[in-house]
Image (cartoon, rainbow, N blue to C red; front, side):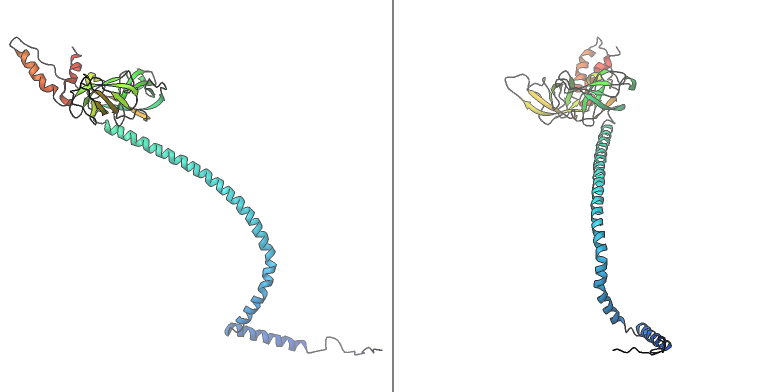
Length: 324
């Protein structure tokens, strides 16, 4: 049988006194702080403790990191999808703006070229936009957005930056119809810039081809010659490009050569044209013949004029006869 102890001493009083324990722990703490602060003696111990505690920290943090990864993955996919849609919309808008800027740049270049090329030809110019094109393949007509209220008149010359485009055939209040030089019903007096040969260029119904049906086989005309307007009749300004000769076929048995020319104007690609006002040159009237033989001198004076360059040709004589 176990006998119970009958020690009546208080439990708190057993063991070492509390004051001594506190003093010992305080001194040990101060010693550790001094050793760590001044002598860096506990750095290695701290590294060991940190390495030992890392697996526990990683294990505790793993569920939170896994949850964040899952939520971030779905959020990133949704965000990337939204960003992709937004960037796609911006790219389409940027492409549209870029195409618009390119079109505006081309339009500015065409307008600048037209104004520069017509500066010495016309007294006044008016830019007109093509509103409609005749779909009949045998009628080369366009509708422009300038009419009688803008001073447009029937028969007015129409140019572009490269050459003669056509002339006004009908005038309305706000619009006007223009017949192109390639229309089968249109003809224009032209002159070779190289040889000075004058002839007529007739439309063929093909926007890339004009016909010169009145060129004889002996005429001084060859492929590559530039044909310019003569100004005869006062419809078109003198000296403006019309076409370039592309073919000259001569047959000994034929009277006339087969001659084709390509218009210099961009008849099927223009979006703007120039309506021009100009003053036709007026040649002085020839003196009347008298009875002393002055009539014989008149043909002799006129012969050099026929061989002179376009600036001195007798193309303006009909205009001089109009006042009479």
